[in-house]
Length: 364
Image (cartoon, rainbow, N blue to C red; front, side, top):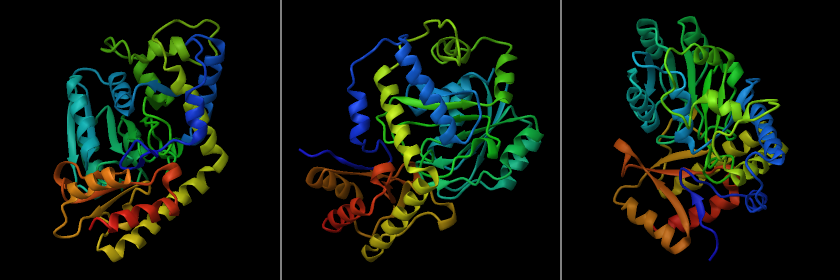
């Protein structure tokens, strides 16, 4: 049986070199060879994220672990966070912050639209939060957030800027230093074309200063940044065991990052944009249209309307069973109203789109 064509919201298909790296013989999680691979990943991530942040590395866990890591290390009971909520993952940030005893101020926008700067500005200036959090690429809606001015807004009001870059990383511009992002997390299974299991994170010096001035212990041992850095921090003469890192996943990530850098970020971004435009061109005759306005679209993840009278769940099931193609459904208020089509990394390709549209048209 051929590999499933993964055109949902993630995971995505992996290139052969990444799968080969995943199957290499194991070394220990304190072996110098593994540490060297981790160091290489950290430097490559800095390049892809456009940041000089020293604390940039892959957390052992999926993107949700990255979300928890940036929140649990900064927030303390009684703190305030302002969260832009225009989809599932903004909601999750707010809900998770409340689990750690913070007050979450939700600034809500219709699903399918980006967060307006003015609404975020009003909330930040009123509440003076510790963190302003936005989702760079909202996987549940296919919206890409304009980050212009948000770093200054946060910093001028004494806050850190947090960005969820799970789906945007390596498929659209992610410019941490230019945007003024202090806290970032992503995932390996989207545009990086690596299996799920690691979450790249990045902490600015401003964020590290806040972390180092905590009044209470980090309530998670596994995600405690201070403990993790004793294990994988830069240039340590002696490393302290903290947890058993997923050695094979880090090796695979190293190979995946090489592919991204060899292609070049601007070329990769352009390929994702071209793929999305071609997809919409091919879908239009089927009466399937973009859900998000052009200026706000997340290139690697397209949300599209479903033609009247079509049983969307039955179509997705038939595509998987008959054609071995995975297609994503809508979440929350968009359930049953949109499909989510992931063209991530190797799948941002016109031949892939032709195959998908041919199979889809036969099901309508």
